[in-house]
Amino acid sequence: MQVIVTGATGYLGLHIVAALAEAGHAVTALVRTPAKLGPLAGQANVAVCEATLSQDDRIQQAMRGHDACIHAAFIWGNLSDDLELRDTVASAKLFDAAARAGISRTLFVSSTAVHRPFRRRMSEDDRLVTGDVYGATKASNELFLWAACASRAMEGIVVRPGPIVGPPAFPGGAFRSPSRLTDFVERARRGEPIHVESGAGRQFVSASDVATVIMRLLTSNRANETYLCVAREITPWEAIARRIVSMVGSQSPIVVEPRSAGQPEPTFDVGKLEAHLGIVLESERAMEAHLMHLVRTG
Image (cartoon, rainbow, N blue to C red):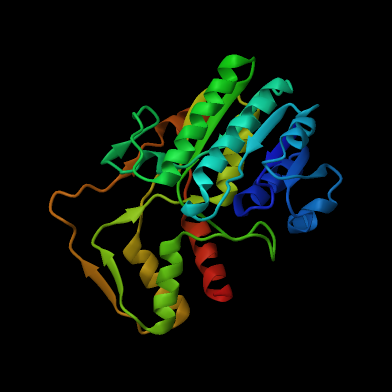
């Protein structure tokens, strides 16, 4: 299959390109800085297209001849720079370009952030009432994907990962960490207290598992579907904090504070992903590798 990938040099994007290439797909990596592809750029079935999401003509030309598109890019920056508007416009144009180029299937990497503010139990059937700009941007982009699919004969898939963990795709490759994990490490290095709420945690997901899910969905008979992509189990913040303190060799005390009365523990229902793909995700090993890399690199 001929697959074009945006955000190919990002933390998740590199895992996606590596998985596609290993499976024998012909990959076109849409990138701003080809050098960030590292060893992947030297693989025979990986082509490089140097472009930005704002180069409409270049994007349209690059789409030609491909069977599928994976949109994993996001325009990061300050809110004062209207990043949400620029990302939404770029995504809307990209989805339209894919449809007009005759691409049969486009996968969009969204986020569980579209569900904020989080509730006790969340699923793909929830009506979205996003509580922040990032979540609203991802939700808007989902709608533009469905609009492009409706206007032309293109199938769409939305994948909503939770916080992504795991090592880089290769030594020196891009790495991004949930801010709270980084904060825990910094506090441990300084010997400061680390505050967590009793019983609180998150459903994380391995970067390599997200890549595997996307690979499966590329060739699945499922179409025009949305999938939450997180581990079934909740990883407690307290357990993460204690592991970090141990890794750092810190004397930081772990301060466990009581939960607010009646405050539910948000949980994402992954039943649809498990039923449709027959896989159960776990994040324990990826979390361990993520924390080791974070502690080692600082």
